[in-house]
Amino acid sequence: MAKYCKVITTVTALQYSAMSAAQDIPEAPISSPDASHYAFANYLGSGIYRTSGQSAAVANIPISFAIDQAEDHLVKLRLPISLGFFDYSFNDLPGGQLPKSVGTITFTPGVEYHWFVDERLTLESYLDMGYGYNFSNESNVGIMSFGISSLYQIDIPTYSPTWVNRLYFAGYRSSLNDSAESYSVLQSGLDFGLGTSWLWEDIEVEPRLFFAGRWFFDNLTFVNPVGADVVTNHTYEVGATLKFSKPIGYDVFGWDGLKIDRLGVSYQVGGGLQVWRLIFEFPL
Image 1 (cartoon, rainbow, N blue to C red):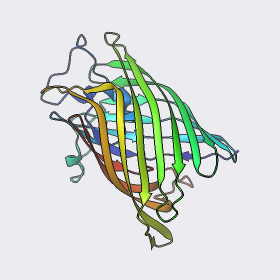
Image 2 (tube, one colour):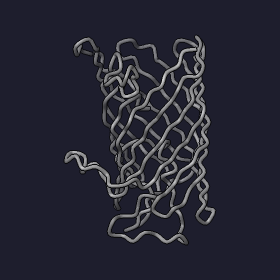
Image 3 (tube, rainbow, N blue to C red):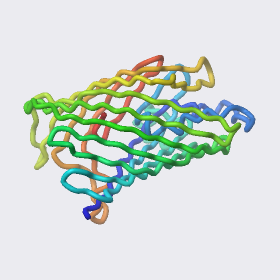
Image 4 (cartoon, rainbow, N blue to C red):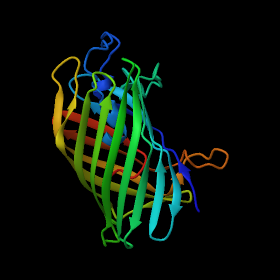
């Protein structure tokens, strides 16, 4: 049984409702509602989420192990972790400023199944059940998420486009006031090459573009502590990546978990939400 472990650390900035406690704003009392969108960190995606309020940072660490694989299927054990940091934005990165403390943490283990229907079509499904903790008000959340996806390789060899469709659900229940919230989303996007590539040492580098739309069946609310909340039921995204013919990065005692498959950036907008994402893997 072939096994592997891959970790990609993505430093991001997300405007989550749980991360609305700025240094100049008093910590929310325990009796106040627990705005726990940090529970969705692994599913909303990495990036700089900005509204008319403040921003905060999240480091997503998507750890996974292959526990079974064959010619027609692959089964993974998912162990993703997200760390949230108050009052930290993308502007702090160029100066090398590091977060002072961890504000939130989530751990959502699960199982992911890939069915290789044929050489072009792959169907995927997953089920996660996990836990999150908000250090600012000492509350915790139980998290559940599941989803299905299809990835289709379109027969245009020059541009090798991949059409991706995903339908998934995520929800949480908090220990603070027993509050709960959920959202479900349909995502569709296309990732394609530009018909060119070049060699960097012994690695082929291919520039690729992608675009995607996300439509939320339930309005997704980002709580803003200094203004009106931001409510969105859709987002649209465009981006560009460099795809490497083999992972680049560093080996740690023979372990390649710190290597990346892609490097890119994207911009996402919708319903008053603006997102800049740093990309280190397949973007859709």
